Length: 382
Image 1: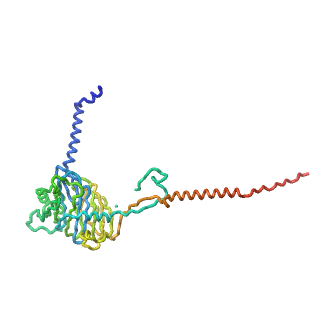
Image 2 (image 1 turned 90 degrees about the horizontal axis):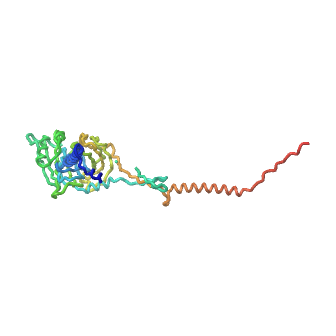
Image 3 (image 1 turned 90 degrees about the vertical axis):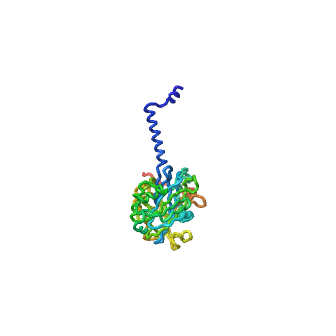
């Protein structure tokens, strides 16, 4: 009982101060994680309001290019408690923006699904009789006229949960100011990252995500947006992802006349080809390729340290349109009529060996017994 009384004695002096400091530190860290914006987006800079947090778990885009016109259908999978967020995407020429169709992603994912094959093995492994353990088996916009305002509004539309502004700009600071004044809250450092695009006279698509239903938050897979613009090269803007604070994952479906490849890794892991092959034209795909012969290249890339991103993805045709498809092998024990082949082989060998031994024993039993020859003893010498 006395021990219990001692346990309830309040902590005093230095011990109490140290405990209070630890509690305050943990509280500050937790609070910081809630109010610190989570910049994420493989194609630009995305940030919620300062009282919320949001993470882009995955960005998947379909990119179509016929040599003159490029289209990008982008879809984000997000998580968090943000009721609204914003991002900006530079484009080399004037763009049109509309809501896209989620069905195209499902169709492409079906096409690139890996082929499943069965691979047999002879000797038993873990999980096969007589073993008990298991083991697993281990892819440009025209320049603004002289005297034009620093920021020009080409158009502004409401598309579902998206507030879309299409802009021109001759000054990155002025562009950031316009965005902030019009409800597009974007990360610090944006003006510096926009400077190369301003110098190249690109235009911008700014998107504010705000659900139409009051009180709802941005979570799950958002409706895709479809951008279309003129371009004599296939380019996927990525430079603004330098502002992301978490590792990024990018998936690209590239529809073009030939198999395509990025010119470089632009600061991420080496891009991985998960599919390459010709696809049959249909209504869904023709809207991205013009209805001609189409080659689909599927790419995955990871960006563990977004701050290392040093440019945009520019894709070029490979030397050959070599097809590629992932193969997933399912390993199975070789059997004959449901019986393991190794057991039949070993059992058969043992049966043959036993038969040979029995035949030899039987042959010995049947052989006649021949008495040894008589030994002649010479007569004694007289």
